Image 1 (spheres, one colour):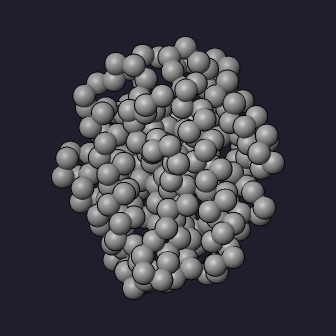
Image 2 (cartoon, rainbow, N blue to C red):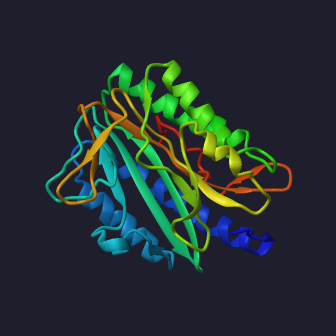
Length: 259
């Protein structure tokens, strides 16, 4: 879909609310809290602002957001029995619906004394996403996004998950185009145009890029138990470049976050 100026206004509002939600929960994300309680805080904040948590009941998903800890690549289901511990790295992925528009975003959180390799993983994941966003504008091949991310991450000894990708969004949760985070020749056939809206959300592993899905049919883990990190922004292609709809107003896009 191609979105116009009015749509971009709606996407700014929902993107800001989604980012504000992650900003708000930052003070709560620490050792000892359960992922269930984080999910509850996300739900309450979203409802308070007259919006909806898109993941809830989406294809049967049971919670309001996804919380993925350590070797979980994505779609970690919040649980009363899962508590954050010192040394964990955690991705919190939310999608907010406001006035019919979707704001999809995620961030990593570092809990206490995190290993140096884990910090390196989180840094390269964030930087690869931002570098990929920076080259987006009309006329650029979609394949350039994956090329930048793959080159940056593999150069530092990390791997790019290939089973999940970014996606078109806006008035639809998941739409075309599929935004791969590694290079494929086929992606050269899609050219970015003004008004396109999609996510860039690289998932990067310390070990092998392959994964398996738990019996709950949602939670994806690294095949070798290595750590995984992810960041995500929803962006729109403008006449001369790109707009990030889900950027933090408090500058909390990348850890360590300052309270």
